[in-house]
Amino acid sequence: MRIIPAIDIIDGKCVRLVQGDYSQKKIYNEDPLEVAREFESYGMRYLHLVDLDGAKAKQIVNHKVLYNLAVKTNLQIDFGGGLRTQNDVYIAFENGAKQITGGSIAVENPEEFLSWICHYGGDKIILGADCKDRKIAVSAWQENSDQDVIRFIEEYRQKGISRVICTDVAKDGMLQGASDELYEEIIRSTGVNLIASGGIASIDDLYRLETLGCEGAIIGKAIYENKLSLKELSALC
Image 1 (spheres, one colour):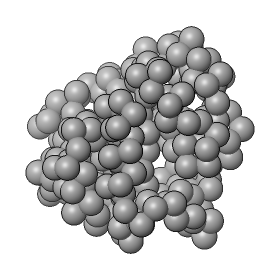
Image 2 (cartoon, one colour):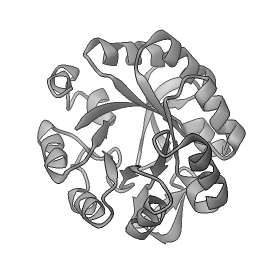
Image 3 (cartoon, rainbow, N blue to C red):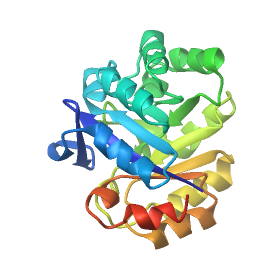
């Protein structure tokens, strides 16, 4: 299972939210590059980079941060947040993203999202299937749709998506464990390569996700709050 540390960006700074709530923002580092380089020094090969400003603005904002990390580290970066147009996606790839994640766009404008899959291929485009009470959440998690997460993922699997990031919004930032039952159901029902995100707080959480068959696990707050050390995670890379 791939270990994928996360960096969320607001105003060019490394932050974390609680359950997607922008009012519960905590700044962990003024310099995302310093954080990324530390991840790399412990053997991390992947990075999940989220443009929270972009998610709110509904267009890419922090592409300069992406470029800086892509040029000055060897991390393979998955970039998401605010990608709504072909031009946003072009900017992300031009600035060093290896993959991009589309979430709200896949709900609100499926034709546009499908055009990305057609143009770049399913290996470059990740489906963001973030949910609350099993319903897909959109607009930086500020709104819920009426789409069931399992059905949503399965429909896109049939259209060429092979990799999915799923965050249970209720778990995000709570450090109370991941949504194991939901992830097990997703894997069993759809067969996608599932990347778990949200709530991970211990090595045992990671072992459970690996046993369930998750292809990757995104870890954010547990690192910043010293619940999981980079030394511990390096042994899993």
